[in-house]
Each structure stands twice: as C-alpha cells, then as structure tokens.
Length: 200
Image (cartoon, rainbow, N blue to C red; front, side, top):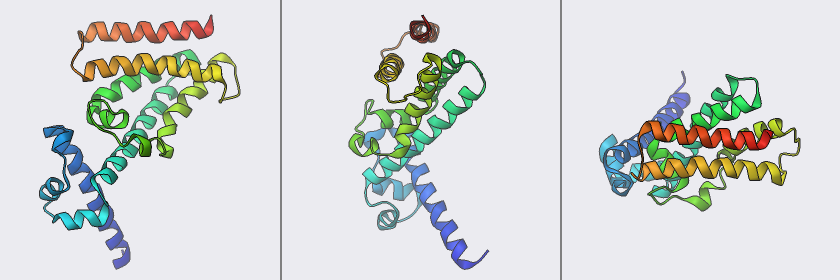
C-alpha cells in the first residue's frame, strides 16, 4: 500500500472513530452531553483536529443521521427479501422498522427528532432519507397494483402505516410504554389492519 493510500485509510479511520465516539457518548450520557470537546477527549485528539473532519457538531449529527438511514434501509431490504408476497413483505418490513428503532434508539431519535433536536431541514435533503420511503412505496404499489409511485393513494397508505408505527415507537421511546406483549399486539394489529384495508 502506497503512502497516499495509507493516509486516506487513516483519515477514514479517524472519521469513523469520531462518529463512533459521538454515538457512544450519546448512548452513555444522552444527546445533551455531546460536544466536540468531549468527542476529542474520548478519541484522545485535540478539538481542532475534530474540526478538520467535521466543521461543527451539526455536521457530525448529519453524518450520523445518514448512517441511520443507510442502516435502516439495509434492514428493510433484508426483511423484504425473505418473502415473495407484498403483504408479507410489508409486515416484515414494518416489524424490521420497529426492531431498528429500539436496537438503534439513539440514531432513531436523531433521525426523527424524538426527544432530541435534529437537523431536520438538512436531514430531509439527504438522499439516504428517501430510501425507506422508496422501499415501502414500491411494495405498497405492488400490493395495490399501482405503477405510479407518486400516486396519492400510495402516499396516503405509506403515511397511514408510518404514522401508526412511528407513533407507537415514539410513545415507547418517551417512556410512556406498555408491556412488550401489548406493544407487539398493537403493532401487529395496526399493520394487519392497514394491509387488510389495502387488499379489501
């Protein structure tokens, strides 16, 4: 490996270390504790070096948001790939969405501004933020036999699903939750109900 390649690899490793440190701080202490200085302390660099990689804390938050959407999209794609029928794909994908939210609680909070400030205007402009929408609307379109992915009907069904699932996730993330069994039953009933309304 040449010196140029080695330098690029080290820069990418440092960048990843910064993001990993930021996320670990949030997991340990919450979003309010995150600062450039604290990140620098964790990775044993000076704060000015962090600024060479990210211009601000918001830039770090935006990159973590991008990472969250990529991870969520990958998990949705994997869930979809396990089934052939659109109704089964949708159920599996929304369950995967639910599982992602709790396995990656801090990322989810950031992506959707749940109990934290998000860079929502910037986040909404990320190409990666459209990936879950694209995956879901394609399957909804397949189920409804509608080819126009910009159809108002597909959009309405997507937001019906998302409002229910995201609402239930948010209630739980804010600590106003019921038992796991009740949550699972409500989630399953809601997903099944919307799917049945589509296929009726």
